[in-house]
Amino acid sequence: MDYLYSDTGAGRWIAPACKAGLFTLGLALTLGLSSRAALADIVDQANDSIVSGGFTLNAGPIGQSFRPGLASLDFVELMINDQNPDFGAGDDIALRIREADISGTILGVSETVFFADQPESRPFHAPELVRFNFAAPVGLAAGNTYVWEVFRNGAESSDLGIFGTGFKNDAYALGVPYFEGAVYAGSEAPFDLWFREGIATVPVPAALPLMLSGIAILRLLGGRRSA
Image (cartoon, rainbow, N blue to C red; front, side, top):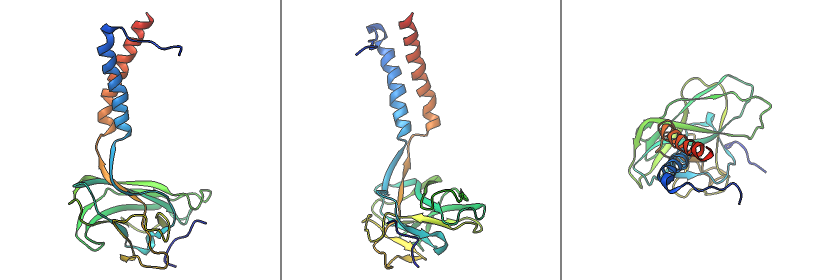
């Protein structure tokens, strides 16, 4: 079988004019930076409407082509599950970015992620969001075709499922999935794998000191108002 499965008014206050500047600064630092930290990623290409069906990693090489709109990426996210829970310790997995197709030149390799063996009690179809980060941005040319390829970076221990967005559903028009090293053209085609790729723009640790400064300003103003 060439696929994994199918899924049948009180309390308001206004700062005095002499404090307005500090209040505005504190509020901006607190809300603005916290919002930026929460929205740290710029997602370029994505196929993430639903999670349904997929390929087993044992049938690799497994991947998906895409055409970026940006000139680089430094993360890719996939949905993955353990197809054989309570068996083995887990797997080290990583991701390659290739040029043109799944046998093309390797432009970058992600940091390795350890996917732990899942307990039998976990629902079989429940996937996990797995993020693959690259130590340095992978340079791309907007509009050209690239492929992300997920692979084991070590010995096989578990049978992992790489999720898609529904069989017989051409959900991503700018790419195709790869199964066993070739463009998938099996009985469940068209099909695309679930993914997001893009750029992480605001490291949360870097934003945290400024956000804490904003909180301190607001608390100071609140203390003076209470006094």
